[in-house]
Structures are given as structure tokens and as C-alpha cells.
Length: 301
Length: 324
Image 1: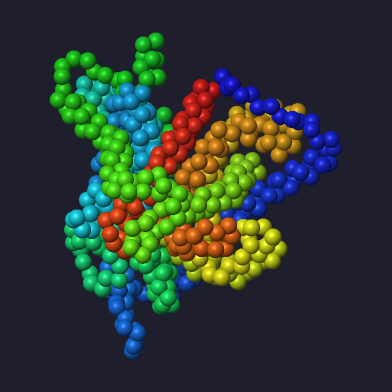
Image 2: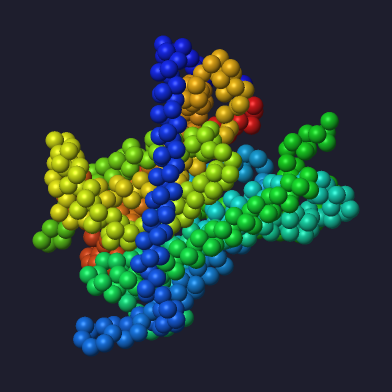
């Protein structure tokens, strides 16, 4: 079916020896490239952990940031309020994105005509590619200008970026649910909606959890959508009101890194270690759930 | 026969005929509304951003793209020329480094690595994509920046200083070269994971055929794998480029936020996305906000075109795989 049949110039090199050497060089280069990528990951994670370790203690998780005048002993400070802020912002974003993502996946996989489904999927894929900073600017001009910043507005921006991820991974698992299960349910007299919600959807829980976790991991580290929507930094009080801007871990890292104060640098490294830890653990959980649900559904076939 | 056709058409074709069930209608309407959010949001984002950029678009027109300024003494003159320059230099610079690296990594993982090594290395490279940009930026400022100023910069300037891109010595850690390296780190996992899938999809008969004709592994890759995956590789590069062009945080942390055009990569510069991010505290006048949104319009237009192109290529490639 393929139109371009690959043509290999198999006899260009005159000597087998030269060809073998070229082959070895390329193989070596490919191995080095893979090694290099892993090395970069190790170097980045190692510098975050080694520099952040010193900042991490109980106070770091429970205390809020403190304003330091530069004289006398520094009061114990932490990123407790930023952690709380991030949890609230992400939580609200999940509440917004999860239903939309799941319903979208149901429509695209179970109900939509194929042509329409592919157009709608394309829209989500394109949406997924819009830079986070543009989403931030969109929410800024849409609901912030004239009304002020608020944590839920940051959640809105993050939710836009989470929906495609959740829809995608739910859909992938829905597609694996055997069609015979739907047929069996319909044959027993269940309505389509009943079949979809209580037979098909429970099978896809693994995919939903994977999508939600991946989306959380992605959104937890995003700074750009927060800049114009909930850009609170150096806040020294604990607050829980999503109608006000809340501090967050990424904003704390972003603003502390720009300061000249080595103490703040250390705090930023500590916050980075916490953030990377959360994200790596979330990614591992997501991977585990994805593997498990795919394996289970494939095993049932 | 009819059953087979229904199966091929997927779950959507499974219909119960007979009495009307309100539950079905409700499910259909609710899920359809959810699925339309993608289209609705795309339209809404475009409309809102265009509306709020309008004052600046009206005042500066397309001249905005060729004006190098961000606020003069009356704060009335804005232009994107130097940011466009910085965006092009940093994204294409990163693409230039990331593409061969990613291809090599994908080849290593699909053609060379033993199974156990593959199962260790592949997830690690995916994890690289999970590191938040703000953390990479922090690393960029405090670790990579000093390394460029003290070690890498002088070495490159010393040996390749005759090239315009290395013609000055880095004086501060914040420069376009640092931005290129950070963007490369972000692109590699994206491009390499797409390429990996593409290479796995190359039919083994074709590879085996070439091997049977006496081709070395590299000749198989060059003669069979690359030509077969060509369109997909292009799509992967576009997606990687889109990521780099839109990256605001890590770039604004390391690039130096300078409204200037320098050919030397060791000088500070700025990109479109980075300029928007750096203005989060101080957009003073209405015109400045509108100009900021104008920058977002440029980014939006670029990302819409790039993603649409990449996705259409991906779809075509995927369709071809299904037919086989």
C-alpha cells in the first residue's frame, strides 16, 4: 500500500572494512547520545537533591515564607503556604478538568461518528500544543483584567492544559475494552447509557487514574499559567481562599531564583526537590496504573 | 457479514433500536458538549487574545514585527523584532542540536540496546520530560550559567571564536547559549519518544530484506528506517520546535531579557514567550498590556499552524500504518 518504497544504496561503499567502521562509529555515537541524555537527567536531579537537601526539614513543610530585614538571626521559614496553595490550585483544576476529560473520552470513543471524532480529537491535539504562557494570557484577558487575580483563575488555565491529557489516556483504555462486553450488556436489555456508564466506564478506571495523575504531574510544575492569574510570592501568611491569589511552589522557585540572596537560593532548591519528588512519584504511579490496566484488558481479550 | 461490519465500525455503531430512552439522549448531549470544549476553547482563546491585542495591532500594525523596542521614554513604542530574532535563534539552535541527538537515542533504543537496558533507559529519558521548566530554569541560572561563563564559554570562544556566533566571551551566565542548551534538554525527550515509536513501526520485512542483502546496521537505518519514517521525523521536529518557541519560564530565567539583536550566542537576548513572562509584574499602561497580548497573538498563530501541520502529518503516517 505504501507509495514510497525505500531504496537503499547498498553497494555505495567499496570496502567492507570501511562500511564496518562507519557502522561502528554510528553505533558508538548512538550509545553515547543515549548515555548523554541519561547523564543530563542524573546531573539535574542530583544537583536539585544535593542543593535542596539542606533546606528540607519539618519547618520547611509547615512554616510560611518570612520577610527578612537582613539583621539578626533569620526566623525559621518554609514553603508550607506555597504547598497548600499548589494543592488547592491543582485540586480545583482537577475538579474542572476531570469531568470534561472523561465525558469527552466517552463521546469520542463510544458515541461519535468517526469523522466527527477525528476532527474533535484534532482540536484537542492542537489545543494541547498551545504554549502555556498563551493560556495564561488568555485567562488574564478573559477573567483577570478588571477583576483581579485569583487561585481559581489559575486553576482554569491549568485545567485547559489538563483536559486533553485526561481525555487522551481515558480514550486509549476505553478503546481496549472488548466490544463483546458492550454487546453482552445490550443483549441483556441494558440501555446504551447504562452499558456505557456501568459496564464500559468501570473497565477504564485505570486509564482515568493514569490521565489524572499525569495531568496533575504536568500541571503541578507549570509556572507560566500562574504568572498572570495567581502570581502571589513572598507571602508570609497561610491562606486557603481560592477567590484570592494563592502562593504556589513553582512561583516560589521562579521568584526566589531571581534574587541575589543565597538563603533564598537554597530554599528554591529545596522547593525544587519537593516539586520534582512529587512529580516523579506521580509519573511512576501513572505508569504503573497504565501498565496494569492495559495488561488486564489485553489479558481478557 | 453484517456483524463483522458493525465490529469494524467500533462501539459507536452499536445501537439498540426500539423505544426512545431519555438516558441515552442525556448521555449523548452531555458528552457531546464536553467533547466540543476543545473547539470552543480554541475559538474563545483566539477571539479573546485578538480582541485585547487590537489596540496595539491598530497602533503598530505589522510594523510591530520589524520594530526593535520595548517601551521608550514615553512608554509608547513597542515592537517584537528582537524577540522574534531571539525566538528563531534559540529554537532553531536547540532543534539543530536536539534532532541528531534524538535520532541517535531513538536508534539506540530500537536497534541497539538489549531489552533490559531499553527498559531502564527509555523511562529515564521520558522522566526528563517530566522535570518542570521552572526547575530546569533554576538549574540553568545557578549551575549551567556559571559553567558557561567559566568553562564552556571561554573554551568555545578560544577555539571557534572566528565564528560570529562565538565571537564574544560570555560575561554573565544569562545568555542565548544557555537558553539553547536548556531548550535542547526539553526537546530531546519529545522528539526521541516520537521517533522511537516511528522506528518501531518500520516493517521488519523491509529491514530484514536489507540485512539479507548484506547491509550493515547503519546502512539499514539510512536506507530503510530513515526514508520510511521521514514524514514522522519532520512532524516530531515541528512538535519539538513548537515546544521550544512556546517555552516561557525556563528561557526567561536564563536568557537575560535584553531588547537587543546580537549574533554572538554568548550575549543576552529575549524571546516572545520569555518577554511575556518577564512582564508579569509590571505591565503599566493599557498600550503595554495590549502589546504584550500582541506577542501572545504571534505565538498563538505560530503554534496553531505548527501543531496543525504536525498533527496532520502524524495522522497521515498513522493511517498508513493501519492500512498495512
